[in-house]
Image (cartoon, rainbow, N blue to C red; front, side):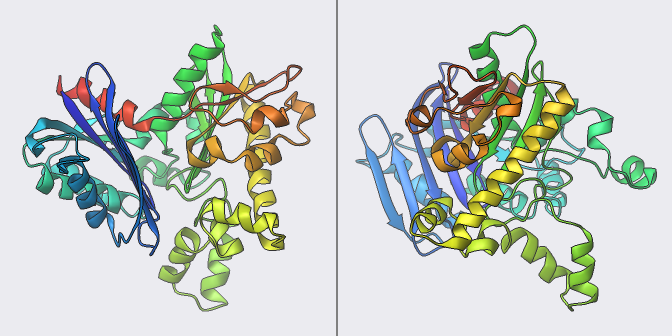
Length: 394
């Protein structure tokens, strides 16, 4: 059975075609920098490895390019769309409507739409991916896998805000958590690698969107994102943690509209607001060329991560391992090195030479004397989505 997994991020579409239940990867790819003039399309099969700079104005156009590649007489891997029986979609926010994977129906689509205000950079794109996939692959079963499901184990003391109780009980205003498929996947890989009977680990998912999870004995107990995927760490265009009174000041004193502020904190803040660049590769390059704003932004980014490590180590009363994952977590030796500096109080020490090695396998980058393991584990949200979609349909 062939399952196409579509993972629509805030500025990218990752996809994999996977043969199940053997978990055989047929092809994979990534459309990144969607909406920019220099969008990049990557596509890989056993026999082809293609990278193109293309213009992709929106997610509909990006998904159409993916379909064209899959069906291409020379580069493609299927002869017609009916070969794909299931399409698994990553959906960021399910609110309290979804605690597990679901077959897509009109009601499910409406519920996803209703949660768009909680994840404005993601849910609309996730829903667009579903709608376009229904048009491009009309005979495939569409399955939604929700980021929020992994965080059902958060204790009430961690997921509840210090607001009037009615907002929690009647309107479900609480911490939901995001990047759940990624945190679940890499935490399970880490537990297998560490082979510990009891464990306290922190998973650090760093991409255009960023989050951290405290995981005790395989269950999430705290998480950096909350009601929406906009607080916590500094991200590509999202501010992460700020004093909420800044919003009132911007509106009441400086005259910004609420829509202006919403756009600012989700699409114009973060690393983009600090540097003029949202892609960390550009920021690291500029920092290397002496750009002070980019150097400071990298230091701020790493500092925020360090603060969460300290908080989660305290919350779990210990720490066995830190796991870096996702595009930045797996590939930015600079961020990892900055995070590891001056952490000897926690027994964390990164080996500089190990940190520079690139690999697609699980690897340690800690020194031999480090009390805490520091791991890089490539995430595979797509495989996790495929497994959940296959299990649901079958």
